[in-house]
Image (cartoon, rainbow, N blue to C red; front, side, top):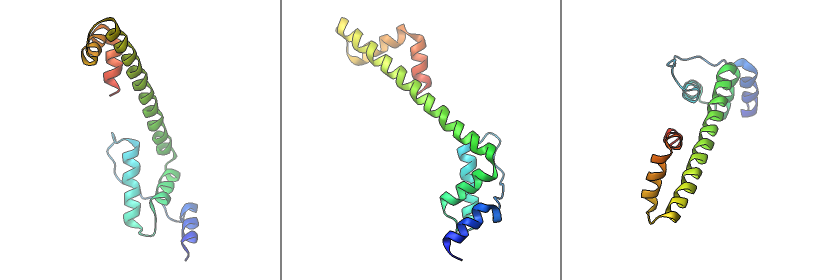
Length: 124
């Protein structure tokens, strides 16, 4: 059997993804990794990409949670960047008004802006 034939048979469902026990609080990426690793151990002819496709096809809800996990990570990164940019701008403004180091100016900015400090710390 050629490798491409195997791929087609596998993707069309002739090989089923064996569900393995995963902690209920596992992140979607951890759950997928566990299932993919189990498939790779079970079937040496599979590569990672094919195994991941099989897992996603077998459990569409998990695939959705996986995508949502990374969408929320992107938002968190954007929030962090916004908080970081705001902190930088306010810090440089404070440095221009007084003779403070960046470290001291940023500390004062964070003390004066507790909401910014919270956003900044939450997204580190």
